[in-house]
Image 1 (cartoon, rainbow, N blue to C red):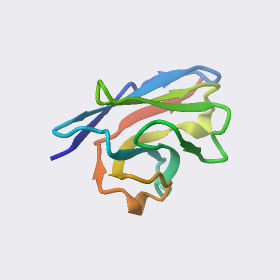
Image 2 (cartoon, helix red, strand yellow; image 1 turned 60 degrees about the horizontal axis):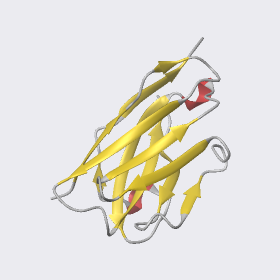
Image 3 (tube, one colour; image 1 turned 90 degrees about the horizontal axis):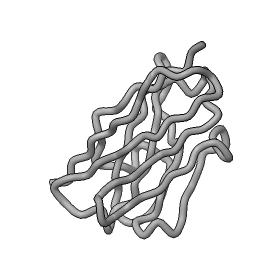
Length: 123
C-alpha cells in the first residue's frame, strides 16, 4: 500500500525559500502522478502543482507559476517542491498526493494523501 510523508515545512520570512519533500513507501512511484496541494485556514484545498510519472510533464496553478518548481527522483521514491519568493498568502498546510498515471490539479482526483507539512510566511 502506497504511503506518502511530507516534510520541509517551516516558518520563513517573505521573499524566502523552502524545499518541501514527499517521501513514498510501500510501492514504487514509477506509475503515479504526484500533486502538491495546499490548504489555508478557512479555505478549500487547492492544487498547486503536479508532475507526470516520468517527470516529463508538469502543471502549475497560475498563482505559483515562476515561483514553484516540482521535481521527482523515482529511484529514491521522492518528489520535491521548491518554493521561492514566498509570500504571506502562501501560508498553508501543504500536502502531496498520488493518482494513477495522469496529472491533474483537482484534489478529488487523487486517492492517496500524506499528512501535510505547515508552511508559514511571516515577517
